[in-house]
Length: 468
Ligand SMILES: [Zn+2]
Image 1 (cartoon, rainbow, N blue to C red):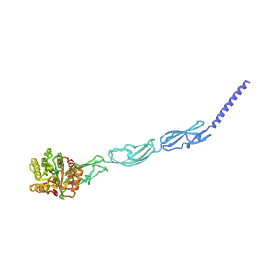
Image 2: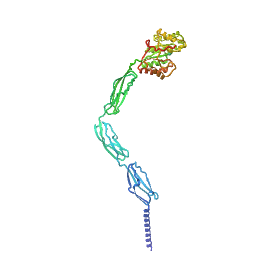
Image 3: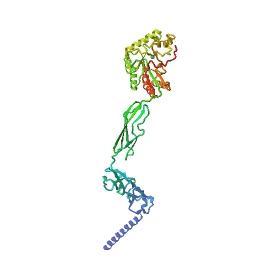
Image 4: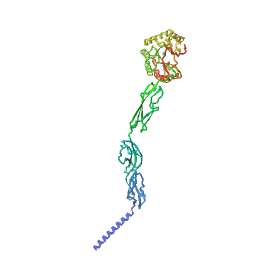
């Protein structure tokens, strides 16, 4: 009996085990399951892959019940796990995506020319590289660039996954460039003063190799406004530093004054501080003028002598320049004229015979003091051996002061088309704008071909119609 009990116990256990195993197997067969085509899928770099395409089959559940987990960078070589988790049982089915780069780069080669012993980068012989990753370019072997002639070189383009493509091309090795550029068209020339002249006119530069050789001009201070001879240097340089210098001379000759145009520049009412500036300007332009001076500006009287010594002409204007006094009587006029004559004589050694009436011979202001005085004086001064001068162009600074631009325009508009001009301007106190206008006034007359002349006894008087 005891034996039987033991046997039944063993049988019972055995049955229990069978039931347990059976129930486990049965249960397992009831759980969801997913099976893949491949455990590792290879995908080419930058090619997308539909991860569900690798699912071979799934059991006892809907596809929606599997939650996909995958973080794949198809632009980067590497291994990426693709997981499908069952939402109820939390079973996880996974496989690996292997992103690989197996495509070698594609590219074109070009031929190149270098000078003997010149370095060249292999990359400069390659164009149009196509690859999904960064590439490096190098020569397949070391070449000897000291040999003249054509050599075949092999270029390697390698990507980040060590895929390589090799191509061959030709490298031309030529002798070094020792030839300087050539400059043509450089020759001596003579041009007229004020003529517009471009130093590049007719000049060209060529180099045996450099398509754009550098050209530099040293103009030697060339200024077509100024008569003189200028040395011009043309310096050409190629990219190899080969240099060529060509030199020529440009002679600027005075403009021919064929039309015989004449200008008398006459300057009244000085001396003053402005006289100094006027003299400097006249010097700078090499122009001579006639000064009708006064007894005013006693501090500046030495400038009258200076002007005279420089070759300018001194004429008499008035000692006091007070109309009320000068034209109070004929006698008063001559007293004033004598006073300025003596003053000038003391400075330059003689009494000039050329004079200008205060206000000009046509003034009417004198009528306020002596009726008919200008009619008398305009004849009488000549009988006394004087020569009086009016003007036919005034820069416009006689009355109220205006600005330099006004004076220049006024002068030009009044002088245009006039072949003989006597210009009136002033250099007394307050005539700063007249001084400022003077250079442009001189330049205009020079440009127009006028000759500057000094007033002398033979010069015609440009007389106005006497009005008193
Ligand atoms: Zn005056």
